[in-house]
Structures are given as structure tokens and as C-alpha cells.
Length: 257
Image (cartoon, rainbow, N blue to C red; front, top):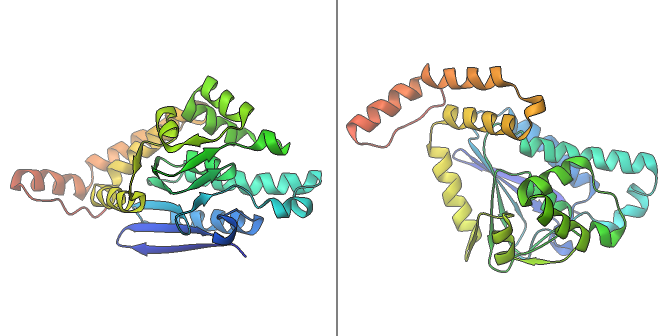
């Protein structure tokens, strides 16, 4: 039975999608559990970065657990409830107020690819493989997932990935913009990146994330909120600390206030 595990070390929360026997396929229960966890972490100001990964190194997420489809996605109400659970996760990831990093090793298919594309940063191992297999299953793909796919790959590359349902290698995924870079030890690289983010000024990163969300979704942009977040940076103790640390040639100790 799949589950969602998490731990917090320093200022970094690590979420592990755990269903290793099924290549971390997402059950409905896992989607619901992940959505609730992200909402709890959103309110935890001590968390400055989130790492999202699969259990083991054979898969990030292989997609939805197809064995549940007959029971969970075989009628209109079931499909709606399932799509709502997936949308809750993708929205929470895309709108999370701090950076979210996907550490991808092995298979990243279907719902796993949609989940990864909702993260701010994406890195993968050399043996990773990527696929959007919806057209091989006959299921419809919801609006937010398609928007993430088109936003990351561009219209033509997204059309090819979706219409052909072909498998892409790590190198192809890099060239398409699915991931930023490919690594021999992706988990070590992501841990290092998350640590760097967590050591920087939280208010500055929060303001930047709000601005990026506004650019991605201009029809819902909260420009006043972005301006207020920027003003908070200049009024903060962290801004004083940053200037002092620079003058004294030492690492700044940011408190997020």
C-alpha cells in the first residue's frame, strides 16, 4: 500500500512518495495524503525549501496506480473526485510559497511527470525516462496538467510528447526543458541545492516566488501582494543582516524576519 513519507532537516522538508513495489505509482490515497501534507508544510515558516522524490532509485513516480481505475475512475463522479485530488496537489506545488525541487531518478511517467512539472526546479539521474502515456490509456488529461506540460515544453514539443506518448531519455528531457540538468547522483545534487536555497534570505525568495507565480498566471496575478512582499524584504532585519554580512565578508545568518 502506497504512502507519503516526509522529514524535516534544518530548513528543508523532504517528501518521499513510497510505493516502491509499483514504481511509486500514485494511489488515490497518496494523492489525498500529499495534498494535505503540502498544505500543512505551507503554513510551516521554518521550511524554506521542499524536496520531492520517489522511494528508491528506480522511479520518481510511474504514474497513477492503474489497478485502482476500475473502482476509482470508472464513472463521472469518480473521475471528478480523482481529478480534484490531482489538481489539489499540482496547484499546491505550483503555488507553494517556497521553492519546491523534484529529484527524479528512474521512471517519471504520466501523473509523475505532471507532478514534476509543477515544481520550481527539476533535476534527474542519467538513467531517468520520461513519458506522458495518456493517449495509450484512453484517459482525458486535465487542464492544469496540460498547462504545465505546454508551459515547460512549449506548444509543439508538448504536442509531440502528448500525441505520440513516446519515451524520452534524460538527455532528451534536458534538451526539451523538462529538467534543468542530469546528474550521476541526483539526490546529492538536490540536497546541496536545497541547502543553498535554505541558507539564503527567505523573504527575498518568497517575494520572487510570488512574482513568478504572477507571471505564469497573469489572469490571477496578485501584483499588490508581490509589491507588499518586496517591501517586506526592505523592511526586514534580514536586509540589515545581509548588508552587514557583506561588509564584514562573512556568511549572513537569515532569520526570515
